[in-house]
Image 1 (tube, rainbow, N blue to C red):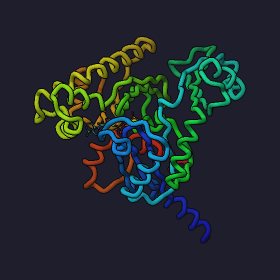
Image 2: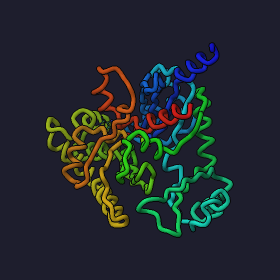
Image 3: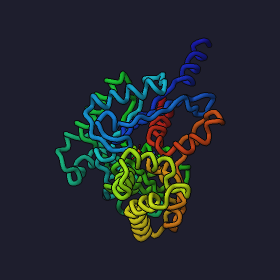
Length: 356
Ligand SMILES: Nc1ncnc2c1ncn2[C@@H]1O[C@H](COP(=O)(O)OP(=O)(O)OP(=O)(O)O)[C@@H](O)[C@H]1O
Ligand SMILES: [Mg+2]
């Protein structure tokens, strides 16, 4: 009996850490399971700009040692108490494509996919980690074809992230391409196709998800830092000042009209890309996107949801990843506002809990 209870206790009390290494910031979220519910233990973010000699909010390209330094700092500042981690792999370091195969090979995917993958992957197949998931079904099922989502990550990328984690004394339970983590955290259960738009620092990632499965993904080389850089240029203020104003008043009425106008102009390529994604999905699939869910630090821009809604027919929502966790009531509003920035880290930790 004692061992039964101690096992149970061990299982219930294991804490896990989701680690999202973005280009502009590292985010961590620690969760634990308690009586069947998911408890938020701690979370934190640290800007990478200062480690690269650039402003907060800007994308960086840092060596593993510097990223590990930032990761150790945020682990300390957030009082993280577990080493059991799940770590994201950037979308830009991976290759994701939807391939069609004859239904006849459905049982032999383990043999067929690696051979087929050579057509899609621009480097030798032994240099990548390969994974795949069948995604056909429902409206997408074309009788004699199955669709498989092919995922490849270069070995060099994996070893870089392994080094970062071990430098920070973390035991990595798994690596996951950020697409899957973001979608897990940002979406409610549902079958209607939705788009998830992750607004990072230098890029914005677009994912279309149906019945929980990723159907399409692409990246736009325009992100939240471009709002700051453009505002700095057009208003003749420093990048630091522009970033501060962006975070403080954003698109709200209490900010200056000139500043708001600059942000709105900078957002227009994103609006166009969102509209294009929605229309092309709708034309190809004869089904409309139920909603567009905004996530990433860029989605925390004040007034963004309302602005996007005024431009789009589809329903616009903000990701609320902490809504999937239990936290003290007084934190509720803060967690809702900060949530989009932490989608990837929450999504990683949620999967780590399931697998714990
Ligand atoms: N309160 C805020 N209001 C507006 N923008 C914000 C706010 N907080 C952060 N941002 C912006 O969000 C961006 C960072 O978002 P995020 O942390 O999701 O990026 P990242 O994960 O580092 O980037 P990527 O996913 O592209 O690697 C920065 O450019 C920053 O200016
Ligand atoms: Mg990110």
